[in-house]
Length: 294
Ligand code: ADP
Image 1 (cartoon, rainbow, N blue to C red):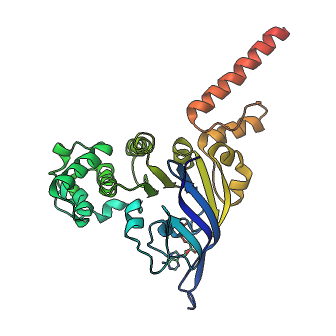
Image 2: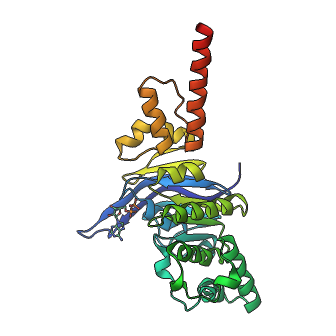
Image 3: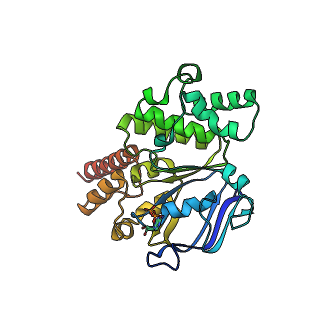
C-alpha cells in the first residue's frame, strides 16, 4: 500500500462558531487518502464535501481534530505554503476565475507567483496545456474568453497543474458541460491519474463518472463518513445509498431492475459495457440451459 498523503482524524468543522448562525459542517471525519489513489467523494448537498476538501490545502482549519497533508499538520500557525502547493483545488466552474488576456498568461500566473525563471514557467505552461489536450502553440496566444466552455475549463485545470500538485481535487468538474465535453474532460483526468500518477479526489453527484474513474468511494452524510469502500462494494449498497438520497450508476440500476424482474444477473457491474456483458452472459447461460433441457 502506498503512503498516506492526506490524513484526517476526528475532523470537526464549525462555521461561525458562537454566533446565532453557527453551523456544524463536519462532525468527526476519519479519512486516509493514499498516494496514487483516485477517490470519489460523494454525498447529498450540504453533507460537508466542500468543507472537507478545503482542509486539504489549508483554506480551512479544523475546529477540532487533525489534518495532515504530506506530513504537515494543517493548523493555525503552521507554514501552509507547501500544503497549498501539494494540493491543487478546483472549485465548481473554475473557468470563472480566468482573467488574463491570453491562455498562456493565465496558466503562467501560479508559476510566476512562485518566482520561477521565465524558461521554467514556459516549460510548465506548455506541459500543463498538453496534459489537458490543448496545443500550446495554438491555444497559448488566444484569449480564454474565445474558447468553448470545455476548453476554458481545461485551461483552468492546466493552471492548477502548472503548480505541479501531488493531489488534484476536482469539485463537480463536468457540471454544465455537454456529453462530449464531459467525456473529454474525464478522459484527461483519467490520464492524469494513470499516466502522471496524480492522486485525484473527485467530488461528483454523477455516479456514472465516479464509477468510471474511481477505485474507492467515500460517502459523506450530515458531516460524517457514511460509507468508505472500494467502488464496486460501495455501489452494491444501493438501498443504503438511496436511503440518503443518492443514486447508483445507471448500469447498476438497470441490473438491479432486471434482477428484481427475475433475471439472475450480478449487480456489481458499473458501466454500460460491463452491464451488457453481464446480461449477455446470463442470456447465453439460460439458452444453453434450455437447449440442454430440451
Ligand atoms: P457539500 O459540499 O456537501 O454541499 P458543504 O461543505 O458546502 O457541503 O456544507 C456543509 C454544511 O456547512 C452545510 O450545512 C452548509 O450550509 C454549511 N456551510 C458551508 N459553507 C458555509 C459558510 N461559509 N458559512 C456557514 N455555513 C456554511
